[in-house]
Amino acid sequence: MDMADGGRALVREHALIAGRPVTATETIRVDDPAEGTTLGAVPKLSAQQVESAVAAAVGAFPAWAATPAFERAGVLRRWAALIEQHTDALAAVMSLENGKPFGEARGEIAYANQFVHWFAGEAERMGGHAIESWSGADRVVTFKEPVGPVAAITPWNFPAAMVTRKLAPALAAGCTVVLKPASATPFTAIALVELALEAGAPPAALNVVTGDSGTVGRVLTGSPDIRKLSFTGSTPVGRKLMADCAPTLKRLSMELGGSAPGIVFDDADLERAVDGVTKGKFRNTGQSCVSINRVYVQRPLLETFVAGVEARMRTLKVGRPFEDGVEIGPLIDENGVRKVEEHAAGLREGGARLVIGGGRHALGGLFFQPTLLVGGDGTLLRGEETFGPLMAVFPFDDEAEILQRANATEFGLASYVFTESLDRAFRAARRIEAGMVGVNTGVISHAANPFGGIKQSGFGREGSIHGLDEYLQIKAVTLAGVG
Ligand code: NAP
Image (cartoon, rainbow, N blue to C red; front, side, top):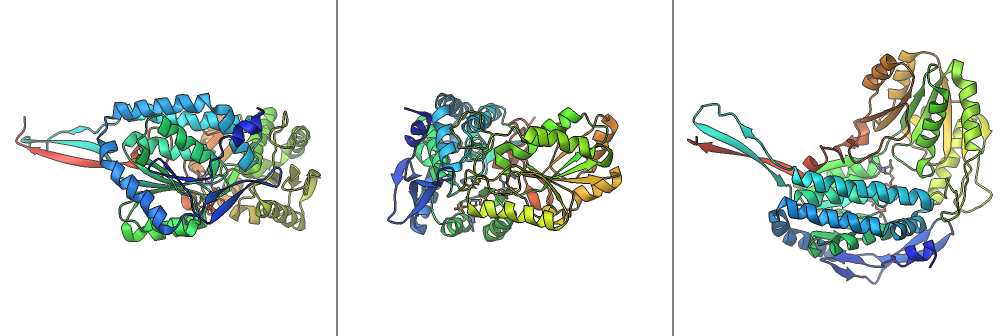
C-alpha cells in the first residue's frame, strides 16, 4: 500500500455523534486540490442532527468533568501514542484533502501531537489556590472547574493542529466537545477523533458535526447549553460568531486572521534573515495565519537580501504532495489562487518589480509559482492576508518609521524582526502590536508557546501554561470560622 492509499483508508464519510457514525441524504464534496479530483463527501447534517450532538456533549459532561484529572491525562497520553503510531496515514489523509506536501503534513501531525502531550501534563497540574483570610476568621479557597460543553470550529489550513489545540485542552479540563471542522478538510479531524475514542475518551464526549456552516453555526452559537466557543478562522466569520454568541453570553476564544510584518534591519545576519523570512513565508504554501505577509528591508541591505531570497526561492520544489522533496503544494481552491493573482497584480500596478514567478504554475490546476515582488504600494497587504506563495518586499529607511508602518494594520497576530542588536530586538518586540514576535526566526509555533493575537486578530491564547485556563472557570469558596 503506498502512502496515498494509507490516507484513503482513513476517509470516513460520516459525522460522529456519541461515538456513532451519522450520515445524511445531502452531502458536501471533499476535493483533492492537487489532483482536482473528488476524495469523498461528508454529510450535510440537519439542525436536528447537530442538536443531537449538542445533547450528547451535554449528557456526557457531568461524568467526564468528575473523572479524576489524572485519568483524563491518561486518555490524552493514549491518544498521543495512537496519533504517533498512525502518523503516516494521518499525514497522508491530510495531504489528500489539503494538498500539503507529505513531509510537511507529517510535521504537522507531530506539531498537533505536541498539544495532546502538553495538555496531558497540564491536566495533572490543574488546581486552585488558598487565599489569606481578610478577617482572620475564615479561609478562602478557589477551585478550577471545566466551563462545560464546548463548541470548536476549525479552519482548513492546519487540519490536525487546529483540532488538537482545542480538543486536548478541552478534554484535559473536563469539558466535552462538539467539533465542526472546515468542510474542505474534515477527514483528518474525523480520523483524529476516532483515535481519541479508541484511546478511551467517552464516546459522547467528542462529537464531530459536518455540514452547512450557517446551519451548524446557528445551532452551536444559539444553544444555551454550549458554554464556550473556541473558533479559529477568518476575522469576519469570528465577528459574526461573537455576535451570535452574545445572547447566550458564551466564553470565547477567537484565533483570527493576520497580516504579519517581517522587518529586516540592516544589521541583520543575512543568512538567518533569508532563511527565517523564507520559512516564515512559504510554510504551508503561504497559507498560514502567521505567514509573513509584508517583508520590510532596510535600504542598505535590500539588494543583497533580495538576491539571497531569490536564490533560495529558485530551489523551492513545487509539486504534488507525495512527490519527493516537494516544498510547495497547490492552493486550497480557486478563490485562493485568485486572491494571490489579485495581490500580485495590485502590487505590480503600484510599481513593484517582479523578480521571479508571477502567475499560475505550469503544473496547472491550483498550483502557483513562488513569486517575489519588490517595492510598490503595500496598503492592500496591510488589510488582507495573501495566503499564498507570494513574497512582497518593501524598502524602509528608519526604525521609528518602520514600526509605525508595521503597526498600520487592523491585525495583530504574528510579527518577525531580524537584527543582531539585542537592544533593537527588544525595542522592536515591545513596540510591535502583535501577540507573537519571532526574533531572527520565522518559526514561532510550539505547544509550550502562547499562541494568539490582539486587535482584529482576536483574543485568547492556545497552547502554553495559559491554554487550559481558556476551558476553566474559577470558583471561590469562603469557609467561615475555619482554622
Ligand atoms: P473561515 O472561512 O473563517 O472558516 C473557518 C471555519 O469557520 C470553517 O470551519 C468554516 O466552515 C466555519 N464557518 C464559516 N462561516 C461560518 C458561520 N457562519 N458559522 C459557523 N461556522 C462558520 O476561515 P478559513 O478560510 O477556513 O481559514 C483561514 C482563516 O483562518 C485565515 O483568516 C487564517 O488567518 C485564519 N487562521 C487563524 C489562525 C489563528 O490561530 N489565529 C490559525 C489558522 C488559521 P466551512 O469550512 O464549512 O465554511
